[in-house]
Length: 213
Image 1 (cartoon, helix red, strand yellow):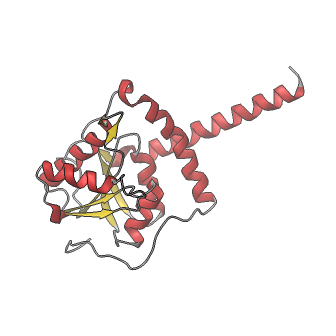
Image 2 (cartoon, helix red, strand yellow):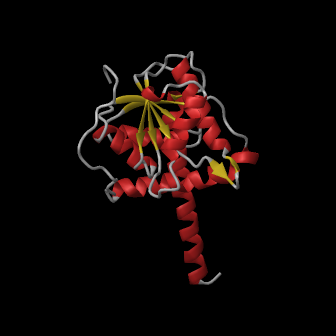
Image 3 (tube, one colour):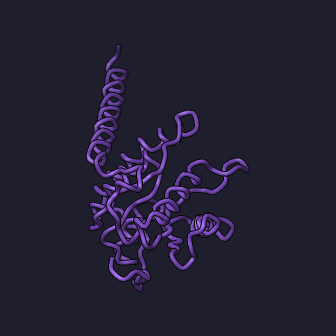
C-alpha cells in the first residue's frame, strides 16, 4: 500500500471512529430520558413536536404519523398542556406546522392548545427558538426514537430541561435510511456547536398560552 492510500485509509478510519463515538455518547446520555409510556414520563406544561414531511411519494410519511400519534397520546393523557409545533414553512406550498396541527385536530387535540413555529427549519433552530422566542425552559420533546438523543442534547445546550417521548419505534425496514442519515446528522450537530452556528431567531418574544412553563 502506497503512502497516499495509507493516509486515505487512516482518514476514513478516523472519521468512522469519531462518528461512532459521537453516536454512542449521545445515545447513552439520553437513554434514561426517552419514554414510550405516558404513565411513566414526568409531566411538563409544554410538548415540542418536531416536524417532518406529511407525505413521502404521495403516501403518508410513517415518521409523521408516529410523531402525531405520540403528541396526541401525551396531550390526552394530561402529560402536556400545550404543544409547540416546530417545523419548516420556508415555502408557501410546504408547511409542516400546519400539517401537524390539522392532523392533531383530527385526533381531538384543540387548536387552542397548539402554537406553530414555522421557522423550526432544523432541530437546532427548534430548540433555540423554543427557549429564546417562546420562553420554554422545561418540556417534553416528541419525535422519532433515533432523533431524540440529538434533540435532547441540543435542548440541554440551550437551557431547556427536557425529557422525550415516542409512543412506538418504526422498524428498520421502514426507517433504516433515515436512521443512517441521523448518524451523520449527530456529527453535523456537534460541528455546528463547535463553530457556533446561529439559528433563525428573531424578536419579539412570544409567550405560549400556558400558566407556568
